[in-house]
Amino acid sequence: MDNSDLERAVEAILFAAGEPVGAVRMAGAVGCEVEDIHAAAQRIMDRLSFARSGIRVLRLEDAYQMCSSGELAEVVSRALETRKPPKLSPSQLETLTIIAYYQPTTKAYVEQLRGVDSAYSVGALLTKKLIEEDGRLNVPGRPILYKTTPAFLRTFGLESLEDLPPIEKAAVGVREDQQLQLQDLPEPEGGS
Image 1: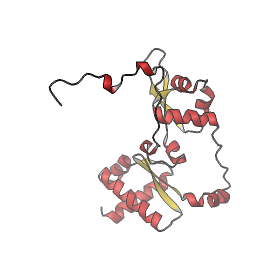
Image 2: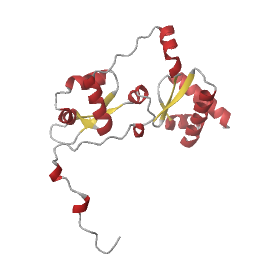
Image 3: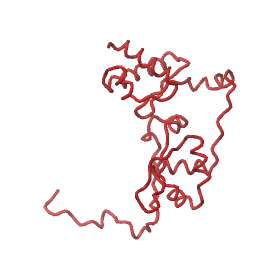
């Protein structure tokens, strides 16, 4: 399949899906390598951006989704009479931030960092489909683990979690005098 046909196939799949479609899934359907799908999607993204098209293709980790251009969001909303999604409260935003940076994580860990009950915020984020369950932690009580969703990436305009700005992660439950410092480590024997 030549590049033009591959791009047409990717566009058709993304248009019909209306939701993120994994590159592996598209490669299997089209009968090509995953790298070919990534290259074709990038060419489509470049072409649509250069032409200032009303549609865009977004990369969401290893998946792609077709959507309307962000600069036309107001026009699309007016035409379709859609309401803006509800805003996140400060507690929900704080909870979402902790889950995004420490995922997969438990509600108890979120509460430990925040210092307050976070059941309502976690429930609201699940309802808004910004987070989802990611199995259970293998400890007594088997608490639920949470992680962010592709909707989280889309909402915040991120291609992947690596696009999150860096933060200094908190060391919960460890006093500074308990943390092992690099200078406290013994020198390796026998050279490097």
